[in-house]
Length: 116
Image (cartoon, rainbow, N blue to C red):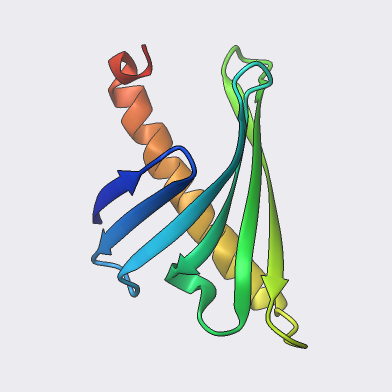
């Protein structure tokens, strides 16, 4: 997957190449570097379609026993109208999110200098 990123302090736009959607727009809700947490909402494009208003992501990084870290993540789905999201849709969103996090992890492990 190739992408281009355009961001500001409040929004991040990703143009997605090679995915079933063209772009996603994230609203940055909060960032607490002291508590290693980052919250944002997917508010446009991507997997939202016409059934979801947004997906909110709440992420917190905590120390792992092996000296590394673990990302604890919570996803909140806000649907449109009376739509009820299915278990399969939730699993699909979780799988895609885990795939993105794995790609980021792989990149950071191969390029630790970008974290300085």
